[in-house]
Length: 230
Image 1: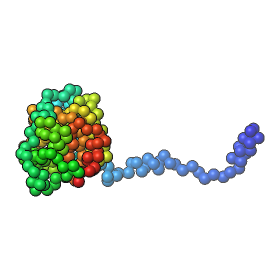
Image 2: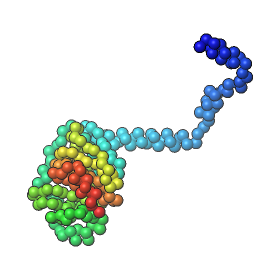
Image 3: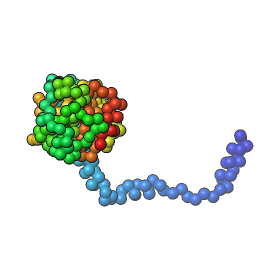
Image 4: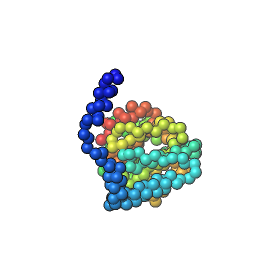
């Protein structure tokens, strides 16, 4: 090893190498040049920070807001404890109609593979709402609610509740366990007194239609229902 080291040292003295370039000065010069794109990018970042701050400026009980990519009309608010809300058995679904009439009133309606037992329409939301029920309104097995792009849904979940993004439609989320669901009124506001206690729910987006399937159902079964809805 000593002989190899001696040979390498000798070779180093005999090689002619080009001068080392001044990389530090070159890089410093590039960084100091004015960039036309810097100002708008910095402004955009500042606006983003302001928007995030505004989104989190909610009543003290709300600890976080999650916006799901793809679910354009659903927001999730986490709270330390769920406020009182109406149970599933006390539903205000609107007026009962046939499925054919619901299709005429709401051309955007998406139809599941299995025909519902009851169909309700309501004009209380912007753009209207259609609710499909399996079972009866007082004894619901499954509930599929559909709204178009002008309606907005807010879900209030307890801090430790499981909310999982899922791959369905153009974006979806699975809500495991109880939470509170609220729909935006025609005046554009949410009324906590109108919130309803909901069971496990799958929410997903198909075009401009937001769908939420609720009931005593597993995530895998709910996904099969969702993927069979056209």
